[in-house]
Each structure stands twice: as C-alpha cells, then as structure tokens.
Image 1 (cartoon, rainbow, N blue to C red):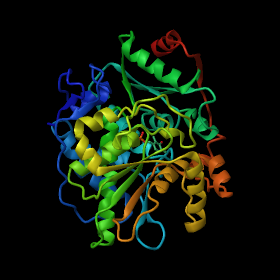
Image 2 (image 1 turned 60 degrees about the vertical axis):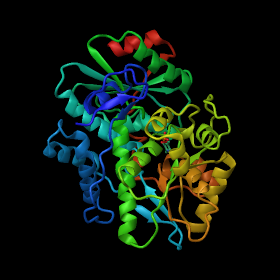
Image 3 (image 1 turned 90 degrees about the vertical axis):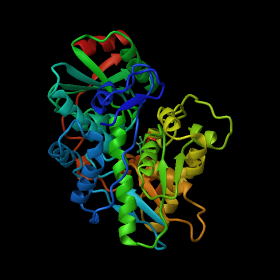
Image 4 (image 1 turned 135 degrees about the horizontal axis):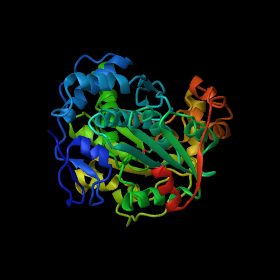
Length: 433
Ligand SMILES: *Cc1c(COP(=O)(O)O)cnc(C)c1O
C-alpha cells in the first residue's frame, strides 16, 4: 500500500483515504506519496474514445488504491468519474502543436477531473464513516463549480463554497449558484483573500464535533491523481498517430501549480516527454524562481486569466519536495505572459487557425511561440472552454464563442446562495447548522 507523508515531515504517514479526507496534513504541510507507481506498458489506445480513457484511468489508479479498493470498485469508480471525451486536436498543418482539450466535463474546465475523482473517493470513504464530512472551499474561478458538481448528492457529504461578492464572472456565478443537492454556495461580502482567510480560520479554529472538515483545493492529493491520467493519454495518443515523432513537450497554463505537479508525477512514473513549459500570467513567482531572479511569494495580481491569479502557489511546496531544484530546472521552462499578449494571442490564433482559445489556454499558447523547426511537438493543455469567458473572447477576436447546451440552459435553472459578512463567527454558525 502506498502511503502519504507531509512535505513538512512532522506528521504520521497515512493512507490515500486519510490524505483525501484530511486535505492538509496536521503539521500544515501537503501530502506527498512515498513512491510513484511506474506506468504499465501501453495497451492498444483507441483514439478519442471515452472507454479507452476510462481503461487507462483504471490501469493508472489501481496501484494507488490497492489494499483499499477492489479492482471491481476501481472500475466502477472510473466509469462514474470519467464520462466525457478528452480530444487531442492538432493546430495548424505542421504537426508541431496539439491542443489537449480538458474542458468537456460538466463545468467546462479541467478542474472537473480532480473534483469528480475526489467526489467519487469521498463517496466511498463516507460509506465507512458515520460522521458528516464538510468540503469547504474558497473559489475565485473554476474550482467552486467543479467541486459543487463533482461532490454533490453524496450521502453524508456537504459542500460549502465561499466566493467573493462581485469577484467572479457572471457565467461563473451562474455555475456556482446552481441549486444542487448537498451544496451550499456562500456569497461573502469581501474579497477572495477574505474567503481564503475564512477557510484557513475554519481549519485552525473550533469545528463542531459532529462534522469533519476537508478541502477540495488542489492541495488535496486526490485531485492530482486524476490529473496524471490525461498527460499519459495525450502522450500515447500522439505516439499512436505518428510512431516516429519525438516525445512531446507539455505546455501548462499554471497558477497554483497543481496541474504541473501532476504532469511531473506522470513523468516520474515513466511517461515519455521532452519536458514542460510552465506558462504564467503576471503572477510570475515560478518563472522567476526557475531563472534565479530572487523570487518571492507576493499578493496576487488580477489578470484576464483569473484562475491563474495566484501569488503564492500552494503546490510549489509539493513540487520542491518531489523533485530537486536541478531536476526542476532541467525539465521545466518558465514563461510569463502579460494580459496584452494574452489578448493578442487569442486574436492571432483565431485569425491564423480558426481555433478559439479561452484566456488561460491563450497564456499557454503564447508561451509556445518562437519554436524552432525540428523542435519536439508541443501539447498545450486547454484548461477551460472559451464560452466561460465570452466577454474577453469577444473583445479579442470580435467573435462570440459557441455556447454549449450546459451553459445555455443555465440561466433558466434554479439558483441559490447564502450571504455572509467576511466574519469567522458567521461561517462557524453556518457550518454548525
Ligand atoms: C485552475 C486553473 C488553472 C491553473 O491550474 P493550477 O493547477 O492551479 O496551476 C489554469 N486554467 C484554468 C482554466 C483553471 O481553472
């Protein structure tokens, strides 16, 4: 059985289930696995097939779950969780650039992968417990709706989502406040930082004894496991299409560095890749760190790619624990991209190829510019559907994104949110209810 230890080294090793339920280790560190199980040789990989993805997921997740779940339970879990396609779309004719579209899940961002697996795992864990679990999460963007969707309707699990009043886009707010069973969206009269402070306060303060508190932010290692799968899926799909191309480079639009950490874990497990690009917006701690520019955690700066507005990436601690500095510098190139360049990239990509990236994906696309002939192909992680950001897309390209059915019907569905001041006692009252 693989166990998990804290990055800060002062907590007991725990099982996957405990790591998922606790979220953060008791010493304040993040859980890291004591080993990363090597990939098995690839089975025939069928293009674009939901079933093939689920099979790969089953193969990759089984070693993590062994000693806890039976193989039948793992199979049922992945079939419930990974229900949507994960296409790899070539961009342009030269075969050098490919978009890995991770936004075909229920809430149209890659956060659905982690949130849905987390929901599945919590459901299984809850069967072994009679205590109520409360998933508390602060959101400024896509995490909230993915977690609300992925963790709703589970017996014994309540989801409480804090979001800042006026601090999320209109589409995001509609997604967040959709009435779902077992989910309480809470509009906080304050900023995103206030929301995060309230979450931290809840974890360090008194929690009513009948509930168990956990978090669904990307500090939860359960989310990362789901994200390792699509990297391997993409690498194998490319190999399947063209056996003789060099191994790909993955370009990851990054904020909290959870996605990049998952990719690096897949690499450690044996995935064939020629390295990674960490594409950041003006919140550029990690690119600065990679190039020895005296990087420091800083308050976040608002940008067009709001889900990447992270001044102090929490997964950096995990990345630094799993990989040493030399290895990180050898494998990862950091790039920073401004809002002006993001808009320019959205327009140019649209004009050159007819592909419409969302602002986060555009940051990554920009970071791949200037590739030389004969360089390894690049797989860009397309992390959100452009229809989640219609205002920015329209401004950049002059065209409106196609609206998927799921978003189109959203406005007419039932919505609901609690309102509180940015006050710890108000949150405690709400959690105790
Ligand atoms: C969360 C998010 C990111 C950043 O991912 P991290 O794992 O935090 O680095 C990028 N793009 C979108 C659309 C997101 O929602």
